[in-house]
Image 1 (cartoon, one colour):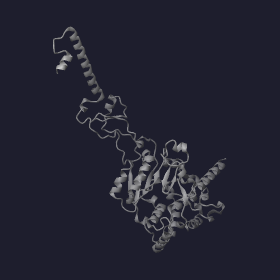
Image 2 (cartoon, rainbow, N blue to C red; image 1 turned 90 degrees about the horizontal axis):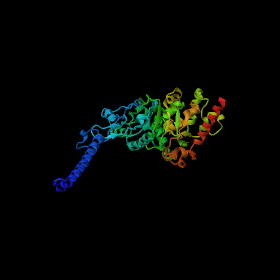
Image 3 (cartoon, helix red, strand yellow; image 1 turned 90 degrees about the vertical axis):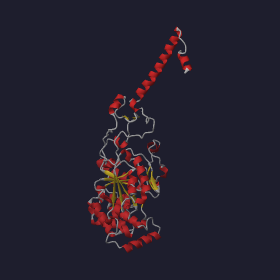
Image 4 (cartoon, rainbow, N blue to C red; image 1 turned 30 degrees about the vertical axis):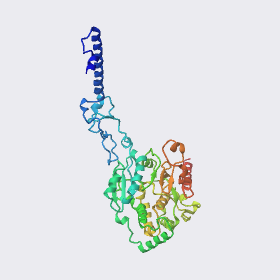
Length: 449
């Protein structure tokens, strides 16, 4: 204290010079005190906020209302009632910035891509056929889809299962997206043997394929899955409200940022079916599928579209028509973006019912991929089928990766390796598809001339 008195000149009677120095020192102290008071006043919106909790950790509060499980058509930015917009103005902040009343902390705008996307959405959904035990695998797939695509679009998800979903499954997958989710159980008649199928004969076929080491050859549930995706998924009550779907399998990967809306791309260009990978089917699984298809077309020739893609399905001269041999090429259906109005059409439903009556799903192992591929190739014009080259995708063991390094890789959009893509692999059918698509486009331009 004596040192302070000495410094202020209070320990002895002051001279005139000392009184002058004293006044200067007091003035300095007053200036410092004023600076401290002004700093506190302008830094904090209110001195009332200077309580004992101010410097404790506070949870970050979202200045927008939560969008979790909202209708995808509601794209309006709604300020939370917890935020004082008048305080924003007084603090010189734009309305999109926020001040938390309890702490006085300032927050920059919430940049939720879904809410900031003002463009219209299609009537569409992601769909996954998944079991409860596939939880981790489907969560991984959802993370890829949400990060790369859906966080900007906000489309809903439909989950289907032949068994009831557990509470754990619903809770965990709900944490993977802000979009609305629907959970449904498959009707028993869509996941069981039709009455006309000889189950003993079907069991013998499975045992035979098991001995031949055919992939999923011994699996009964795989056959139910193929039949369900061939003829029933688009008729499930949860799916009837939608036009477009994007099929997602457990354990798949997406390598590229998708900066556009694929569903809207389909609608704008009158596309019906989209894919990424095309491969050959295992011959033992579809021994009689082509002959059954040929018989169906002979009975219903009006269903064969004049601008069809028969050249994708056969290697011989297309002049032979359906009498040529099926080359087993198909679009890999674990990735599909499609318009379900085609699957619900009379021509496709008649085709499915005819195939189903033959029992090939169980006596052989007819897959939904070749059935979908044959149907869109024969009943639709080539121009309505599209390969999404810009969507990098992997379903083990095969993957597709965009080739243009400057556009997709050097730009940071994709992290896959084009040289590992199946596109030019001997097991790929993409060369055939590219030729059919190119010939179709050339023919269209010639007709316009």
